[in-house]
Image 1 (cartoon, helix red, strand yellow):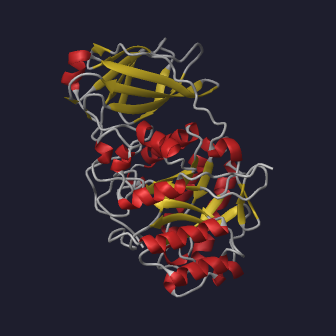
Image 2 (cartoon, rainbow, N blue to C red):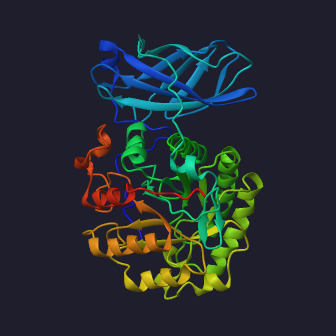
Length: 456
């Protein structure tokens, strides 16, 4: 039950970037920098830096700036190659963002240490030319009225996902494609459109483990995921961290990687109210007992750092509750994972999975807390024509049962499951109807209707 896995000519970011361009632009008319401290603790801080090219397109860029004193040091950075000599810092564009078009921006970030004072750099330059745009920190995004602002910390009550008022809620949102391929789709403009125009409740962050994903650069992918968690939080959306195991299908193959990854992201994000953990995307070719064994080893790692967050466990047969393997979900009902505050994943692709799958979900929903962490409007390959009738039947059923969902995918992948038309992520407009595919138009129409979250 899966999509395109071929490598595509796009790459990932954490704090987001729009399609970019290069040096002769900076030399022509300069640049603008927006800097914000996104977190601060004793002796350390995290910051975001957005650089916008105001001139002609350039290929290959270096952002320079000075720390207030030499005691402030870059400890880790992302979306650029970082270096520091005394107070002077340089960030050099990497493969996927080294070109900056006119008006395009690159979002960078770093963590740093400091001994006191305000961790605020000065004298930004792009390829040696002063950036004369405002350096004012943008005000924090309002959270009142947003999904996270209304619902707060989520938990499982009975078979439902419930909010801080102990009332059942349904979250509706979108999943990224693999952030190693489509990172340029997840920038400030696209996430603003998702939160404000789509009125999405959540962003599922699909971090592939294999397929040129996490196993190739654990620290880098962990940073990218954390950056997207922050971006979702700033817009009042929930962030569903997806440990996207697919091949091999037995999640125990990645048990050690899962423990390392979830120990890190849980410790880092434990204080946030918007994080949900999905610990195994689509187990396949493996028994439920093996999946359960994996879950019962990974969940305690998360709970040690983040005891309150909801955890979602994938199910047999590509997270079909075993239906795709000829089962019906009873094995999960009769042998549930030994953990609290837990939900079970169900995935479907509307053109391939119809009445028998819907019947299985209807039966299971009265006994298990379910979350549709991934579904498509097309066939299980991720391609073919959209099945509007089946998709509508599925969404009506999920609404009726109050089951939360994330659609595959908020991307411009060259497959009919994508919500954005090919080439959208090379531009800067994500809000108009003209950028949507047939699938995207249908999903935006459903997701953008009022949530009416209960508060009493």
